[in-house]
Image (cartoon, rainbow, N blue to C red; front, side, top):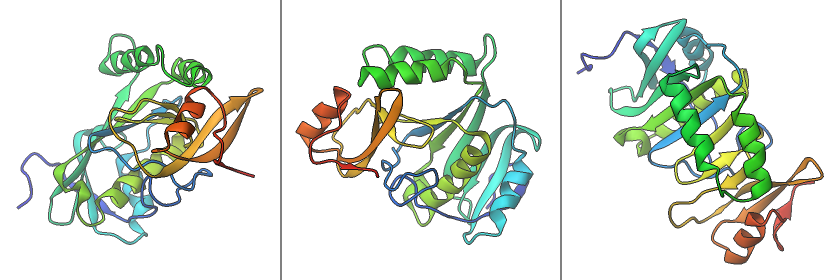
Amino acid sequence: MRPTVTRPVLTGLAAFFRPFVQAMNRFVAHPPKPAPGWLCLLTPSADIVPAGELAARLAARTGSARLCIEAGKDAQWDELLLTHADWRGIARVERLAVEDDTPGARALDAMAASLAGARPAAGADWVGSYVANVKAIYVFRALPAADEGDGWEAVAAVRNTLWSRLDGILQAEGGGFTNESGCQVVWQPTGHAAGSTWMAVLKEGAWVRFEMALDDAVQREHFLRGEVPPGARVAS
């Protein structure tokens, strides 16, 4: 049965690009696997992609996920609900405008505060400067059915559409911050990390991208010092 709190369905969403596991847009081959809680897109754009347009752009792709308006209106939405075809919840997507004395402004202040002592220091400084110009935060909160079927593909479809339209950087729960290309530039792990992902460090004002093994203690320490780790695969 359809939840009574859900607004009318916009359209089915197609899945493309497995998030943080397979190749995604923006030059990144293997971003980190999505955390079970939340993922944020921080954008310097105040533009709003209408919910109907967002769904319509995804409708041509394969997949059966649904996107519904939970709060606001099509051209001025505040919250969307992403579900499977049978209404099992995948994720909630909140749009927080960063204006004086708003939840968005307070959330951004908390993110900026989390950068104190973060490593690498040059990456943290870069993110701090970027955050100062952010005008909106899109928060993806995972629901129980995110791990079922094509749940994460549907999350990636919404995220990538917003990201490509608005630009921005990402922050993942238990992970840290990326640059605009999706490479991890500040790492703030809250638990064990495994697998490999694309990282970047600043050298003479430019990003040097490389693929690093997250569970390699030596490589981690070099990255946290702002160095390209020995044995890391540097992007050509």
